[in-house]
Image (cartoon, rainbow, N blue to C red; front, side, top):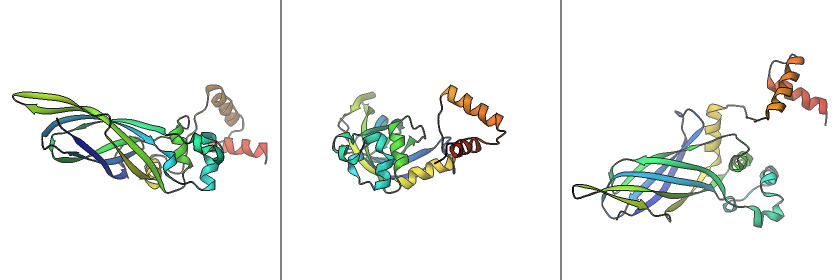
Length: 210
């Protein structure tokens, strides 16, 4: 039976992706010496908030996620960042493949709120693996599973995530609104003859005052 070890060796913004994406370079080692004809790999990627420190500005930005610092001993739970499927080609001993981690400004997702709140440093990631392995056996193939206990950790630079986002949304952020709220904002913008959504929201903020 094949045995695998996994390690993420680097990360970079994927400049060719259609949407914001971080490419994680995954080093896969098969330790028994058999030739892997194909590996249908699945990876669950989590953020482990307890595995780094936070300054006061970051703590304030995370208040709606974790509450006050005094509660963090019980509220800093792992956050689900993504699920990735990756087909790995034929290899013997070891191979490097790029795993595409999609990024988003959807703040309805807790992991995205967390990433946006970070100023710098690193994001502590945990990758949990499973999958199906195809190896040669006689005139045919043998099928086995990647054990559920296969995992690895990686510290993703915050700057890498920011670069991936800025490739597609330079100098901008996205906000999702309900239909009625959007319609009301659209009417206000039209009535005030404002040229952009930024102008509409900026004027509303000024009307509210400090």
